[in-house]
Amino acid sequence: MSSHAKSPAPAAPKPLRIGIVGAGAIVRQRHLPGLSRLEGVEILAVCNATYESAERFCAEHLPHATPLQNWADLIALENLDIIWIGTPPYLHATVAVSALEAGKHVFCQARMAMNLAEAEEMLAAAKRHPQLVTMLCPPPHALRGDLVVRKALADELLGPLHQVRVQSLKADFLDPLAPAHWRQRDELSGYNVLTLGIYAEVLQRWLGPVKSLVARGRVVTPERRGYPVHVPDFLHVLCAWENGVEGALEFSGVAAHAPADRIELLGRDGALTYDIATDKIEFFARGETEPELLEITEDLALNWRVEEDFIAAVRSHGQVQPRPSFEDGVRYMRVVQAVADSLELGREIVL
Image (cartoon, rainbow, N blue to C red; front, side, top):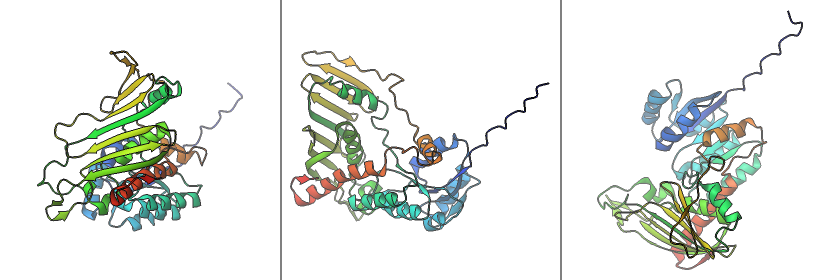
């Protein structure tokens, strides 16, 4: 019989208790499955657009959670560690700042805010509470192949890069008789137009900050069932980066027979194309007619682990900063704000 006593098993981490504000499609489809796979995570309360919808959500997905009428009551619950924001942008700043002031960690759905001023307010609140973890939801667009593109740029596969093209066309808003979608309601979405903020985030991750831009856009159906629409149905943006690269970005919600989203990076020695729908990355060397497939190997692939990353950062007690951070959000909201300013003033905007 051994004389050595067994070491006690390590204690399980303290459960992290979450309150959800805004339990829509993205929460149901992505965040809830991701959180449910993690040990030591409990969702205790849910506030949705109405008490009835919160009650239905809990009955269907979280029978042990408490539905609440008001988000302020949810934030006031002392037994919560994390506020998980899944509403449209109109509530992001108010809820995030209130949650931070109440001592809660904050995960916030993208787009970050209605406008740049709100985004900066959120960042200022996060800086006042550096002991609390804050994170924005990243877009899934070009996530899996992100490191492959960064490696191609770092290795100067394209030679000096000089031009970028983005095409993001959809047919979602073609029907003139359809009601205004929440993305078309500026009181809910603010200055966020179509997928502008998503691609501003992706491209600035690869190329650095945008220096200046000029934008044109138009509302095709100015009134939907009595609601006056001000958010453009299509948008063209010409922009310049601080590193000298220039870009043409095209967005539409009224494009019949729209192709898949696509990014093209054009340089002296070749072109790289990224098919967003399939994560297919091809390199066309200068003078060659056939492309080379840039494989997304498992060591470079980035998969969706947003919920896991955020919870790990909270448990790290400040040792890990998850991305996208609120700083990253402010950077892409500068582009969103500049596009809105350019549309209003009809001129180039320097960021």
